[in-house]
Length: 509
Image (spheres, rainbow, N blue to C red):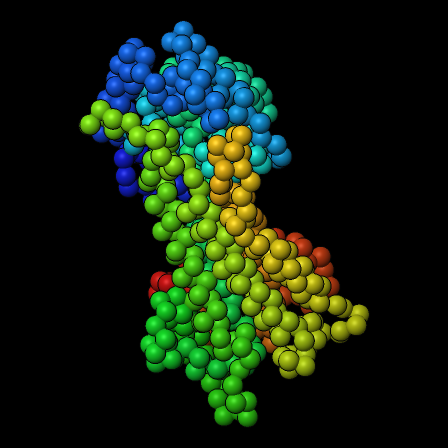
């Protein structure tokens, strides 16, 4: 099993995916351990001096002017986890919770939180041994960190809350017992250090960004296949067009689709036809896909920056023996990026659904109605367009930005919040919906390609078509199509289609 070292910097999206989705284990770097120990030594010195430090020797939020005695310090830390665990809704899925734990450990590993090394090590053991705390998905406003969900995550440390372990939902205490672990007593400042951060929105957003990167490539493949069977032109991929409007995503999409359709006999067969130019859904696909690629890359940069940031308050700097009160827990950077990503991925679905309509409508395609023989008796792919339309419409609702909303909390002390976790959650849903729409387009374009028996498609479209047909047979008469859509989604997630296309045409951008 792969082991990922977490330290001050350097965590990548691939690291996050390895931990969250493929259950890689984690370990702190030696440098990180030293920084954590150094900072903690400073905290303990200040506690003995009875120095007033927010969240360490005081209450929280609007109660920050309440001084806590040394004798009550441990109870304060336990109380913050219990009182802040007020989340509601369905539990976050296992891979998301693993991503949250990994990012929380990564933040603590930077050595600015004041937490003890023993506590971080305990959290690492929970992750590495496969305990998945039950974390309700709703309840964070995305400032002062993801307080409620992170509190639920960390309840297991003190033997409270619930967790999944080996597919069983059990108490946090029982989960620890089954793994041979003891509970831990939190010391000064540790409760706040555990809950004060943006790791829930960043985890959900990170998974959405990663899947969006792959989905953008799949969109180019699907568009190229549709263009071929709709008798489109390769002219729109000419690099001269894109050099005079040099958006990087646009150039990348055009280059991808140009290489995918290279040496297409289907396209060559109609080069002298009477059509002057293609519909926008074909001709403008590089511009639309490209704008989404640029937005996805922006979100990637924001998320990877946040993954390697310190988001606690206060922040401790052992080198200068100082602590600073600030607002790095505010999720606005992630919130804006996730709302932007929502719109970008929604647009991939919007244009895909319009290509699906062109494939199924005989007046637009010149192909059999709904791509099936014996129409009337058979409805073919008719209702898949309904499904795509429903998903696209839902995406439009979900694309309303969450970050422009704010409701004051904590007796108006926290009077502007990001709603970034809502932005990330709805973005993740948009990605899932768009994946289904692209799956439907691939099903329809492969079905249409079955009609071109005597001439070959482009080099990339041919291998994509073969990968689809290896998993899903031609539709000669009506069958339950939800199963085909599910199979196509599994095929997309496996990466096989992209791998086959890249083997032939080179790495897609």
